[in-house]
Length: 135
Image (tube, rainbow, N blue to C red; front, side, top):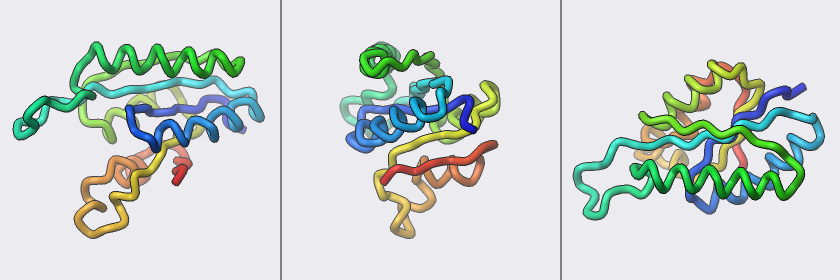
């Protein structure tokens, strides 16, 4: 049913929590797992810069995640891209023919202000395939 699962990752607690669901899904459906991390453009008003804007940090995050899945007996492919997260996630899902995107949710979209800024909300609206949001 889910031949290819795309799991966009960052350093959030929500991503770590969603990983458990990804393991169950991929094992149950014998899916191909693709891990994606997006190097974001640095934010001008951020004093130290966002850690997800560092290509080195993103590369290390992908390797760590790949090792964790490998420890569960799940081979994972990794993709690192630069851009705006929501658009990049949807573009990669389309490129790889993803059958499902699994994402953690920070709950930012629950407020009027957060709804427009939520990566998860944008992905749900733009995705070429179903999106499973893990609360």
